[in-house]
Length: 239
Image (cartoon, rainbow, N blue to C red; front, side, top):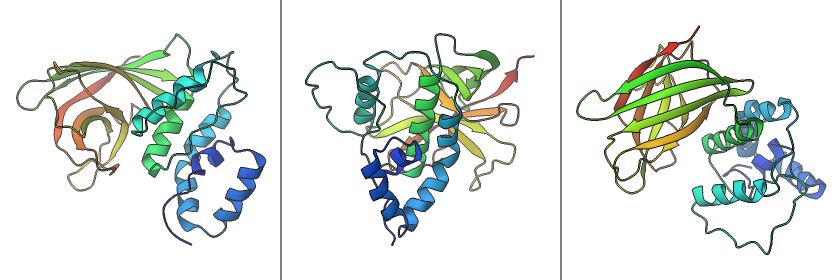
């Protein structure tokens, strides 16, 4: 059987399905090439979640706030909760997302749930400049036990047409036009003055991906870089 990914791929990868849902999905999985491929693609990120150290007590409304953010990102109107209540375990919403989006969502949840007020050890810094025209950014890259957190501060970026967004990349030494060697750290939108200050996450080794770049991308669901570099720079590792 082939087709698009099943709605429970992410929940199965994170072991958040109840027994009935898990059995139903496993029966589906036996005949679905698309879901087996999807699971293989996001398995490394799911393992990060499984191997993460025990978490401190979480705020009672964390699940509601997390799912609300996911629904907004997916373009779904949020449901009005009946009341505040403590929920027994984290469940991902039943959304159909492409592989790259699922992996990014899982990694973001792992890093956000695993971090505390300390973002980690500052590992590298970078200044990014526009090849032509205005635009600049500063990036601080923090090491954590389960990935990197990037604090990105931009100025004077052009306002993009509706539906487009900026994306931050760690660029490898073999990156070429038509043959990208890049790892995405996430997407963002500046404010109406072209400024933004965001926290992004990436499973990357900054010592191997020393260059950083920001591209302008269409909202077409394609995880590959398609736009030119509007900002670029090289990180400086801290010893």
